[in-house]
Image (cartoon, rainbow, N blue to C red; front, side, top):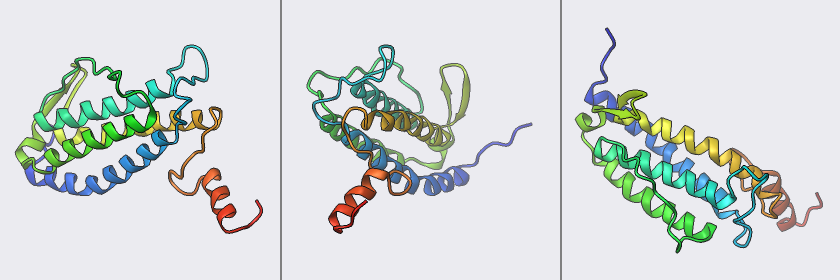
Length: 179
């Protein structure tokens, strides 16, 4: 017999997870914003997603996960990038807006709503709150992919889990130190 998550446990898990979710969001947004505005079509090989396609995949999937937590059900209708969202700055702005709206809803969910079992494509079912971690794992995985695009397309890799080479070089330049 498997143990069920209680509403109090779900609220605790939410409180424990939210600070990390917010930090990871800001980090992912910085990586997206680092895509040079005129290089969004860059792809490392013909079968790879372009930088903008990969950035949209990250933000649309996270929106799908967080929205599914909010309503207790996933909507797998394609969420195509609107033509008006045509560069990294606009994707980052959409990401911020959708993230903040979803997070506000999630923060208001009851323990019972957070423990509701939610189906993921018929592959597995978990309490809604458990999808916060799955969402982050997905975003972090693809953020890592996207960060490898940045230098070849002429961008700078921002600090992710510590100072990046590019951030260290910028700091040294500000401080007047040679690298």
